[in-house]
Image 1 (cartoon, rainbow, N blue to C red):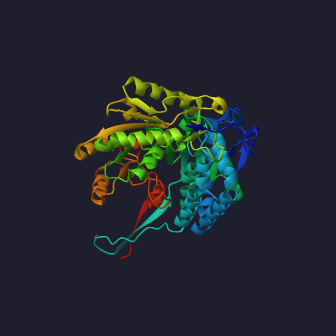
Image 2: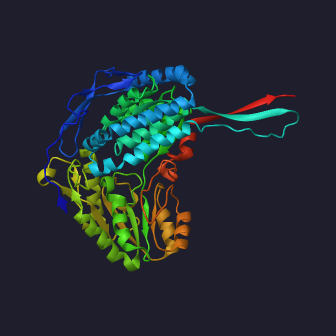
Image 3: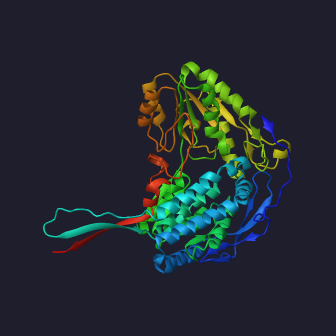
Length: 498
């Protein structure tokens, strides 16, 4: 395994150690309590910024601003104008993309090659939602009632949206929540993760520069148990859009009961990635490896349960382990880095705990299995890309979401039994199939209980294609027309004409 050397840290203009305020009603303000919290570079421990710490009072202020905007001038803005605002925002994101990608890397650790590689996705989402802004419409419906009664439907914005995002992809996660809100005519209060709030705050600046009116987009950083909980339970929030853990998702559902607000949830996963003996193994080795190692395993739909057909199990898993050993681990700002740090001390301790659990349960670490602390990595939260072999279905490392660069390789022999085993999880977000048999690919894809099935690839995403989960991986969809519908109410109108 290669380790990148120490590199000079360039002070990012938005991560210069100064204090960052929150965005409420088009103004940058301190927290009502005056509290702040620090955000650090997970590769070096360096202080990036001190950030205003929002709590219930700040959420109240932001929701009130969002409500005033929704019921005020914003409600008169035409679809074409909302489209233009999103296109302007896309232009600004494109013009500032290098800065935004560096900010993501500094704040949550992802390799700069990865954050730069998100450009097409980030811009594609904004421009897709811009297109959808002028494509919202109801329908006329012929009814069967006696007499002359005309019936039709209207699609209307749901109202004030509380958006809560995780730390594993701040730029695209922010866009995934703000984009459809603007497209549909909603207003939004965005609560970024406390581990990586800076990109969301910078996006707030770009929203104002794009001409998005005050109160339409508000950004309130803070902790989940205070700001997040207040947003989820707020009686004047009409919808919560949440991405994160299933445990927090369950709390949000309970909190939503007060006013029965609409909820959409993209939660965790323990996704099966299935390799058949007839697969193109040369393509499947890096594909299966990076289905987990990308972003240091901090992806909800990572293919962490690697099912491999018995006749090629030893060869294939061994090759995946060798692939993992050759990955370059280091500071995300180094363009040669392939695996960056985990986002925080807490996450590193969680993942390290599972590494211990796996070995105690009898799994064998063919690659990795521990923390990296030598040289330039000594002050960061680095964990080796790990491949566990001899994993059994009932082991905790095969059942629980680790959210780190850890593969649990499981052998299978009976294809029919495989489907039951692959579906034997409380989650259902992603899944993968590697085979050259087209019929088998279709059969397995249909049988898997997951929101996405990738065949001979993994983690392909497009703004026009819906993404979301089954079971404990949540409900609702992001991307695609289904995403826009999540932000709309349907009203039926009846007119007696005779």
